[in-house]
Amino acid sequence: MGSEKTKQLNHLAIIMDGNGRWAQARNLPRSEGHRAGADNVLEIVKSCRKFNIKYLTLYAFSTENWKRPAAEVNALMLLLGEFIDKKLKFMQQENIRFNAIGRLSGLPESAGKKLLYAMEQTRNNSGNVLTLALNYGGRPEIADAARKIAMAVKNGTLDVESIDEAAFGRFLYDPELPDPDLVIRTSGELRLSNFLLWQMAYSELYVTDVLWPDFKEKELQSALQAFAGRDRRFGGVNKA
Image (cartoon, rainbow, N blue to C red; front, side, top):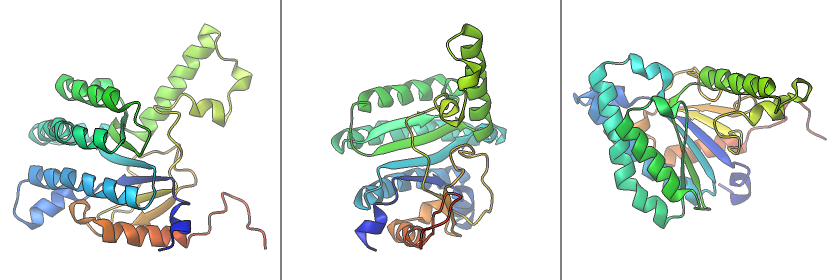
């Protein structure tokens, strides 16, 4: 894969799906699938560094995931804390900025504190940016942005006539996060699952049947090769 093509991809977003099915296929509890999925994150982070992808955003826990059994949700929250404890040193050493988007105040106190601590400790890192979407939903993000805009108009700090797409984007969870160039969904499901609905307007989509714990550098490279062959016109036409 040519490096010139790879450099076109600045932001990769992944809907990490299939942890439960991975565990089920091995007669393991679902929590072990989630643990295997968490272990795989670091491998993909390293691969993104190799392929010069600056931004990696991972859909880790949606606003709808609270509907899952309490034991599974608790295990996921504990796993988040473990992930931060184990990977923070690596992120510091590798100059990676750790980030999170979503309704973070709705997370359990312990997980939320570790999350904010890791973000604070890495906020000055200038290398790759790893963002976890936690307690996240695309519709809630848009609704929260609309609410902030309404308050700004009410307070007189924003004029109604100045509200356009760019102005709206400044009220999203992370206005500095660029729109994803490529969104990958593992496990073969053909839906967006309420992920980055505003930001994905012109993202390229790639779906693979590979379950997330098995999605390694080889699978990522296949996705990047497919992306390199896409004709991205953003609603226009390419010049002959």
